Image (cartoon, rainbow, N blue to C red; front, side, top):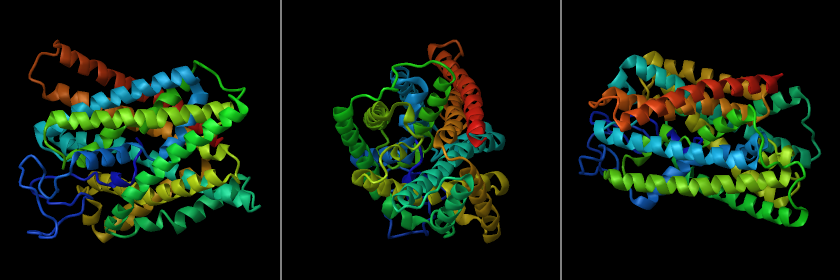
Amino acid sequence: MEPSALEGNQFPVSEQQTIDPMGNPLPENSDTNPIVSNPDIPQGLQRVGRFATFVNLVNGLIGAGIVGVPATFALSGVGPTVVLILICSSLCYICGNFMIELQNEFKVGGLDDLALLVFGRWGQNLLGIGVIIFSMSCTVAYLIIGSNKLKDWLGVAGVKVETNGQWALLVFIYAILLPMLLTIPRNLGFLSKFSMATVCCIMYYIIALMIKSIIQLGDNGIHTTAIGSKYGSGLFQAFSVHCLTFALPVVMMPIIAPYNPSIKKRKLVHGLVYVFSFIAIAIPGCLAYLVHGSTTAGDVLSSYKKDDVMIITVQIAMFFVVSFSYPIIAVSIVGSLGQIFYGQNIPELLSTKQRLILIPVVNIVNLIIAMFIKNITPVLGVGGSLGGCFVVFFFPSLVKLKVTKDSYTTWENIMHIVIATFGFLAAVVCGYYSIVDAINKFK
């Protein structure tokens, strides 16, 4: 997964705080937002059906970061990469089911609430750091993707952006004039209107990429530099990107909260989301790699001819996605920092002074990183390893082990020990190689 327009909804839902599905506080006795009477549905949320939940979860999983998936095939080859995607998506699905069970058991609305309840304030802050790393890798990637689109369009117009200084200037102008400007309003509820448009844009990207790749493969065949397998440190970098791409459990709790409280039904719709997403991500990514081989760019759309009409329309769609997704994720980072420093994780409820401190800090850090790194692959890798592996694999199994009343020698607890250990080691090893790759790209 990589956060999309729905993922700003990462705020706790509780009996004491009535909020709408975008995390905004509702007035007491609100008549404009009917509250469901089912006690298993958090107060303040309207009941949502299966199809709407499926769409919302897909929107939460498949984000603009999928443009970076084709480049992972160049890191490890077709065979190993497909296997890595399968392993990663399966593990994320399993850990997502753990989240569903924990949410039902403790009646919490988000990861913040769960970490605070089980581990206390220190655990909540530690988890918050992991979520911040995860989210910030997405926001930086959004700035790079959006800037790459502008760079390609300027190239078509005859304006070349080649030097590091020109790239930095382009990122600065784009970030200041559009996505960062949208982080200023206290209430971002207006962006929820773009959520369905975001889904449509991403679906258009998937369909268009498959059509374009099939046509090119038919005309030119498989690229001569495309390889079946490659083993080395690239395996860890590729796995890191996949961890971020499929890390739905980071944001799924608030999305699935209004759905039918039946655990069986929640796991069913959750599984359908992963089956659909695996197909929608792996197939276009593999086809695009077969077309471009080792020349596949970190943002795959930059690998195609700049004046290709279909690709330009896809670029416009993805430019829309990243530009309107950035402010929601950036503000969610502000909420995570607000929880750590001020004990308040709802951005709208932070004081003006607190917002004037945190919003510029988040935007400036994102901007500086994006100005000096042009390739999104190492950025996604860092977020997927240090954020995704820690939050998605390590955290839920650790919670399960913390609250269990059974012996650690039971098969279920042994499984949680294995997954937690794997998550921790994957975060360390994949994080190391992703950071080294990011440093090399910076140099």
